[in-house]
Length: 243
Image (cartoon, rainbow, N blue to C red; front, side):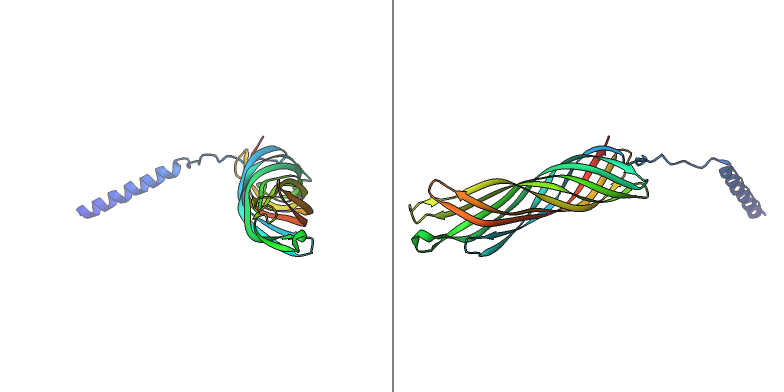
């Protein structure tokens, strides 16, 4: 009898608690920061990632040599977008970045005046700056995702030096040149608006600076490249603040 009374009491308590809980208002989660209702506006941010340069040199005899380097790229960007029709976005962006692209190769310098004598040399190629001004066209998906393609003008600062012992003077020499090259770029990316004024993106860009003749000079010698083609591939992640 005692156990029956205790069991009946427990059932009554549980039933009463359940009924009381059912009458309580449901808990409401704290609101999550809303993504922007429109991509229209201006933004500024930063990016970082990796880059690969793919260069080809051609000498006066038509001999071609390929050079590759890998490195870090990091910098900033600023731009503006306009959303229309209603899921399309058009805009423009300017970006500038520092890069650590550098490669060193053992080569030879030919001296036509000395019967075509070949002298061992160490050629170093560096790209330490990368910039672009591009337009972009994108499509908005689920309000917070933007898939886009971009294209426009690009610039890089390129430095070459070729160190060797000069057979003319019998001294070490290091002819060099620093040049800013102009070219074009094209790429694509995905951007995610994760908060009211913030977005993150992942993108790939290809840069082509064409083929250019280069003259490396020092007080005692000079080295000529009949043609030097410079291309760069860059993959980056970035974050933007939207005003």
